[in-house]
Image 1 (cartoon, rainbow, N blue to C red):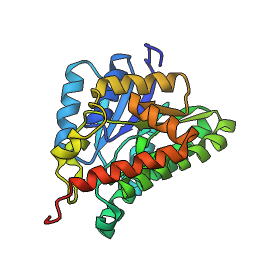
Image 2 (image 1 turned 60 degrees about the horizontal axis):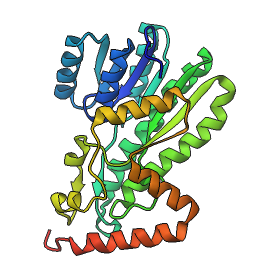
Image 3 (image 1 turned 90 degrees about the vertical axis):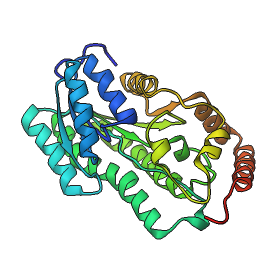
Image 4 (image 1 turned 120 degrees about the horizontal axis):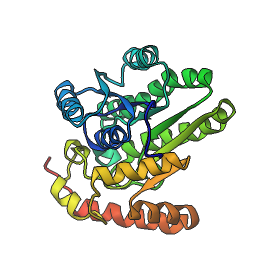
Length: 275
């Protein structure tokens, strides 16, 4: 992405922490005008204060992406007040580490509502505006789990595969209107989602210890995302392990599935049946 983003407008959901906050920091330093949204009002205000102290121009809105009306108001309000929308990062998300046999319908509903419907609501609100403008870039956050088999994350992976599929269809439809689309598929990034993840019958510290790589810093992840956006990449796959697993699954799917089965056995060795 060009260093000079002066005059550009970006909306970022899940903007109070993690990759969302890191994107805001990187884009603000390049002169972008930001509209940050998050469901955590206290954390959002803290982040907004920090960014403004560093010179960022931004609005902060408490928004629950599960609520279509709130997202619509966020996007339409930004367009009304600022006159354009150059980027929307549909970034809000939640995670669950659980085998499918241990996943409740309440778990499913939360994951679908935030990870999938949250993206749908952002696209539904911003895409028509961008079509009328004749420009804009929609950046949807999925996951490496949206590209490959994901041990003990079946429900989470289902929502992220859906985000990839939505983004693929949107890309081919949006091109005629001058609207660009990217899907971000991170591996392990050192964000609060690692700690806020709900673990069912698994010890989070044990699971983190068997991870194939250390999480990368959010700012590093954000720079990789923005580089991909600048280059108009559709798939923006972050971390070496995510790249390797994605390519392996594309070109050697049988081997990829066997690796997934090994991962399942490793996780089951760490299960806590008494939970």
